[in-house]
Amino acid sequence: MNTHTMTMEDFRQDFLSDHPAFDDHEQVVFRRLPEFGVDVIIAIHSTVLGPALGGARLWKYPTKAAALTDVLRLSSGMTYKNALAGLEFGGGKAVIIADPQSEKSSGLLQAFAGAVNDLEGRYISGEDVGLSPSDMDILAEFTPHVRGGTKGPAGNPSPYTALGVFEGMKEARRFKFGDDRIAGLTVSIQGLGGVGWLLAEMLHEAGAQLIVSDIRSDRVRNAVTSFAATAVDTEESHRVEADIFAPCALGAVIDDETVDDIAAPIVAGSANNQLAGRHHGQLLAERDILFAPDYVINAGGVICLACPEQPRIEIENRVRSITLTLRQIFETAAGESLPTNVVADMMARRRLDAHAERNP
Image 1: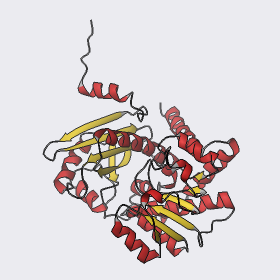
Image 2 (image 1 turned 135 degrees about the vertical axis):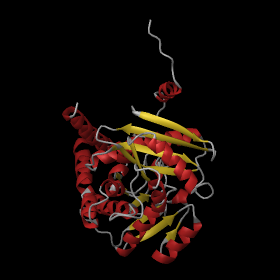
Image 3 (image 1 turned 180 degrees about the vertical axis):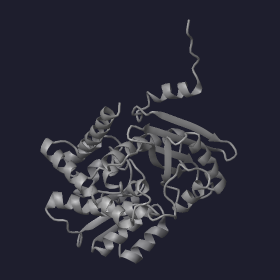
Image 4 (image 1 turned 45 degrees about the vertical axis):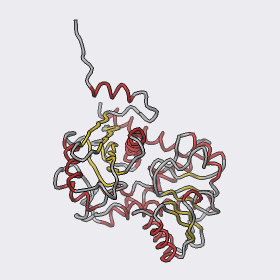
């Protein structure tokens, strides 16, 4: 009689299958770094299109459960992001549960690189919240499975993410109101991190009026001075009267409590997983608010990471082509009376299914 002894990995996968954010992930790895007292979770959602490419997020989560939910959602979003960006990479993500202000160190990054190496190339890391291009340089000393950093033609991916969001805003404006005018518009930016700040610079230079918010008061003060922006509390940024609401911080900002209070007719920002649940896309559509699916509009950074040796101008042109995908999503959603996030998911799955059929 054949017997099977359940390993810890079997147990974890069985446990994960009931998790609400689990989306048939191929592999989820839990790693304790005892010398630092830090936990790491690496989630590989899909390698159908290629190795799972997605950033590592170093963040002090309130609970390990919150970190697990985040990495599961982020990794599946990377699969769809890479699919719709036309990249030959699957989707994955990592979270390092630590305080970026007090616990980040080169030793911690070296230990994380060891966890990445154990996956033998199935997961390729990049930067995300809490990490920087210089941190990617450190990772690259200990693992070949990393993209980004300060070296190479592409360099920091944040400007490309900001460019894609900026161009995506213009496309959303064109679809909803018939022109892509930025001058004179009011944009409420929630989050002034690496991408949010660059986006604010672009919008200011194009003549937009900015309303800004961030949990870091110094960033807000600098934006008020640099861009003649109006400051509001982060909790109010979605309620203010604006032409565009741009979530550029952490995800799940559009939930049961906030969805009815959004005052802008367009939601377009760089944050991942802006919708707390898929049904919130439907609620936005019912209010005639045009939502630019986050993993489409913010794909500029991963396009940069996927094409590190291409000249800057070629990467920028590829990032600008995000608008073509957005236009198709907007038109299909309008024609079929579907939420834009549902249409984006359908398009991504079609590419995955088609690739799987060609490469059984």
